[in-house]
Length: 20
Image 1 (tube, rainbow, N blue to C red):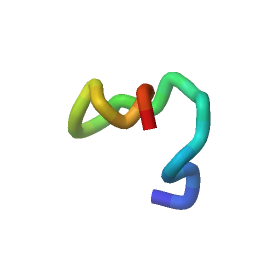
Image 2 (cartoon, rainbow, N blue to C red):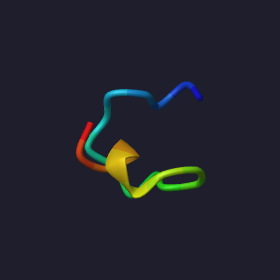
Image 3 (cartoon, one colour):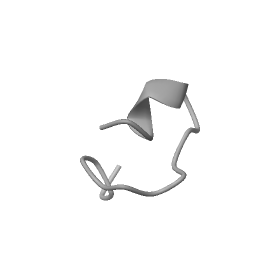
C-alpha cells in the first residue's frame, strides 16, 4: 500500500488503483 496514487500496474484489490 506504499504505491498509492502512482501510475503503475498495481491492481491487487481493485482495477481502479491503476487509474489512481
